[in-house]
Length: 446
Ligand SMILES: Cc1cc2nc3c(=O)[nH]c(=O)nc-3n(C[C@H](O)[C@H](O)[C@H](O)COP(=O)(O)OP(=O)(O)OC[C@H]3O[C@@H](n4cnc5c(N)ncnc54)[C@H](O)[C@@H]3O)c2cc1C
Image 1: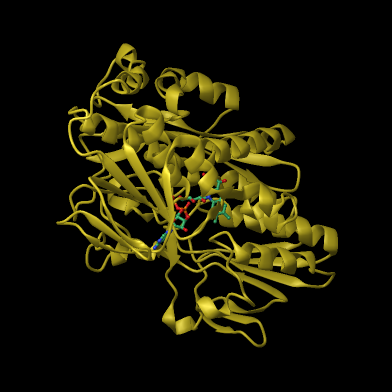
Image 2: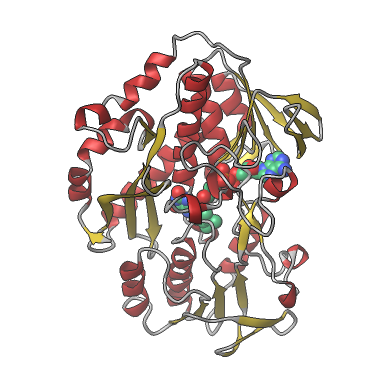
C-alpha cells in the first residue's frame, strides 16, 4: 500500500475515476483489457439503456434495505423507471453502521444516520414493504415474507452480517443489554453511547476486536481511538484485545495514534484469544492473561446475515454466500444475486466489507439487470472504495482503492497502483470524511 496525498491518489486514478463518475466510484466495464477511450464509455452505456424496451418480465425484488439493497432499488429506478422494484426490509428505517462510532462517542446524533425507507421509496417509485423475509422458492421464483409471497424475475439479497457467537464463551444475543457489541447499528448503539458517557477517572475499557473477515476492517481500530480519546479526557485506560496478528486496515496510521497520542493510556495486544468471560465480575480471560474492565465492548466474530442461510445461498460448511465474481449471481440459485457484506469475499474479491462497496456493488447489479432485461450482456465489475476513520474527535485518516475484475484470476482484484492512504491524520481529512458520510447517506437512502 502506498502513502500518498489525496491529490496524488486522484491523479493516479484519474482515467478510471472518469469512467466511474456516473455512479460515484462504481460501475461496470466491458473486458479486462481496455483502452482509456473504452474506460470512459462505461458510464454512458448505462444511460443508453434507459430508453430501451424491456424484453422479459421485469420485477426485481430486493431483500434488505441497507447500503446494498437500497442502492440497488434506487439505481434500478434511475436507470429504467419502468422496472417494477419491490424493496423488503424488516425495519421501517435503516440505521447506518457507517458513522455509528460517531454516535457512540457523542459526535453525531443518531437521527442523522437514521434513514426512513419510505422516503427513498416515495422519491423513486419503489414499492417498499416492511416485512421479515422468511424463505425462497427458487424454482417458482417466489420470495416468502411475513406479509405474504412475492413473485420475482430477479431477486437481489443484501442482508448484511450476523454474529458468529463462540458457544464456548456463552456470549449470546441476550447478553447485549449489558455488554453491547454495537456492530449492527440500532438500540445497541444507544446503549453503548450511554455507557461511554458514564466513563470516569480510573475506569478501564476493554475492546475485543473480531477475527477477520468482518464488517468494516478499520472500524474496530477507529473505535479503539475514540475510546482512547474519551479515556484521555476522563483519566481512564483502554485495553484492545485483538485476535488478529496485527491491525487489519490503515495499519501505519492507527499504529501511530496508538503509539503517540494514546501511548500512556492504551494497550494494544494482538494475537489474543479470549478463552472465557466472567459477566458478573467483568473479567475477560485470554491466552495472554486476565483483564478486568469497567466497560467491556466485545465485538464477536461474524458471518453472513442469517437470511442467506435461510434462503439456501450458502454452501455447506461455509459462513458467507457464494457468488460469481463477474455478476454477483448466486452460484447456488439462478436469478438470485447477493451483494454487500454477505458475500464470501475471500474466493471472489479483495474488496472489504464496507458500506461504500455495498453501495458500489448495488450499482453494478442494478446496471447489469437493466442490461439483461434489455437483452444485453452484463458488464464485469469496476468499483472503488473510500473509507474515513477518526483517530480523535477532530482528525481523520482515509483509505481509497479501485477494484476491477480479473479474467485471469476470475476474481475482483485491486487495480495496480490504485490503493493509498494519506501521510498523516488531519482536520482536513475529518472535514472531507463528514462530506463523504453525508454524500453516501444521500446517494444510498434519499
Ligand atoms: C462501527 C462501524 C463503522 C462503519 N463505518 C463504515 C465507513 O466509514 N465506511 C463504510 O463504507 N462502511 C462502514 N461500515 C460498514 C457498513 O456499514 C457495512 O459494510 C454496510 O452496512 C453493508 O451493507 P449491506 O447492504 O451488506 O448490509 P446492511 O447495510 O446491514 O443492510 C442489511 C439490511 O437487511 C435487512 N434484513 C436483514 N435480514 C432481513 C430479513 N430476514 N428480512 C428483512 N430484512 C432483513 C436489515 O434490516 C438491514 O436493513 C461500518 C460498520 C460499522 C459496524
